[in-house]
Image (cartoon, rainbow, N blue to C red; front, side, top):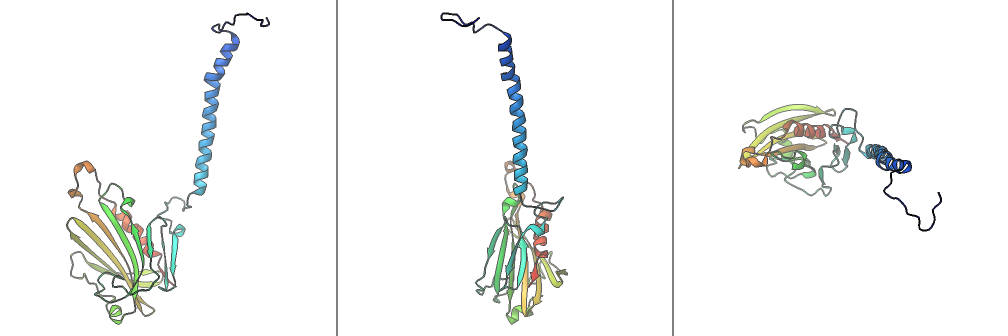
Amino acid sequence: MPYTKGMKVEWNRVTWYSKLIALVIFVVFPFMGFYWGVGYGEAVILASQEQAPPAAAGTDYYQATAEWQTGRNDQGGYSIAYPIDLEIDQNYSMKPSTDWRIGANGTPGSLFLTVTVPAAFEPQTNFSDARLTVGSSRNDAAIAQCFVSPDAAAPGASQSTTTINGITFAVFKSSDAGAGNYYETTSYRAVHAGQCYAIEYTVHSTQIGNYPPEYHLQPFDAGRITTLLDRMVGTFKFL
């Protein structure tokens, strides 16, 4: 019956078309929204995967050394790779420094590179940081002492050799502690092109028992840290 002026509309009356409208609003629309939402989520995931740094199958970025940043220092005569998200400090000034290696006994050299692994790499643990350096010296005394460990008499000190990209390096390991802090140092050294080269890293951690229990700190994964640092050392090449 056509609507005429003065006709009363029965809004509360249930009809077949009101049931159909309710079905569309409460059933069909939510289903369509869910379907579109899933499709959008999949698209976002695929886009993020396309933008993520590539890594070898079955490995994470910190294992895929081929995907790391390669730092080349022509003045220092070497190249080395490292994860791009670590703290990097490169020195191209060639300014003499006595910090080019641990225990340099005041002999001058050049500190080319410092790579720092921050505490956030092992969150909620007693890991403080780790630092890897690359340095060299042409000083006669430095070359003569290149394979002398300054920590030979220290507890836990050891010496061995290894080959990195065809070059034999002496490897010195030592440890130190004080005021609740622990330092584990590994030093790789080689004489090449009339210089003593030192690639060294120190892992710094703290005594976990010094923290209140409510901090819920866990022991850091020392193997994960040293493996990462050794992988960086393994990419070292002379130019």
